[in-house]
Image (cartoon, rainbow, N blue to C red; front, side):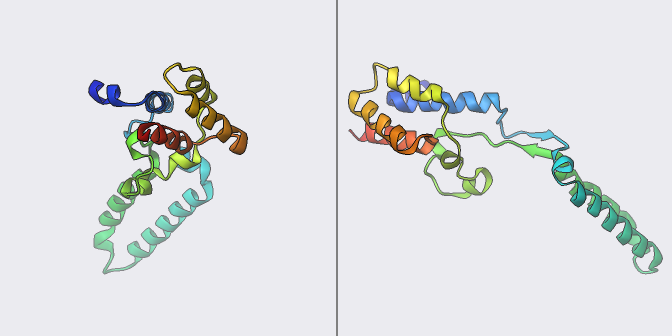
Length: 164
């Protein structure tokens, strides 16, 4: 994020953005595809079933006079489509995506509602001299009521700070 934007942020927004950036680095969330065999580990039966179905289709095509000429197409399509199962993409989390409903929700999900903030963020907010006492009190009430807080909870706290 640009320095001018960071200067306009409240302290809670800044701490939340730093936490999100740290989370992205630790979990290698960079929107880049990475080779992975996690699909095979998670769904071995489905993976074996795909190959059984492919060999069955190949056998039928080789027996058919009209389809034998397009066997190469089956092989190419299978290799290309199967390749998608060997790549994982970890989408980058961004502060700007919190509470925004658009196509990114389909890709990222509502991560800000389902992931809890680390205790270090809560401690940083509570011990920061740049966060006013009203917000600290509101944060402590949220902790007492909910226990674990999501990124959205901290976002609403930051939004109330920006409105004030």
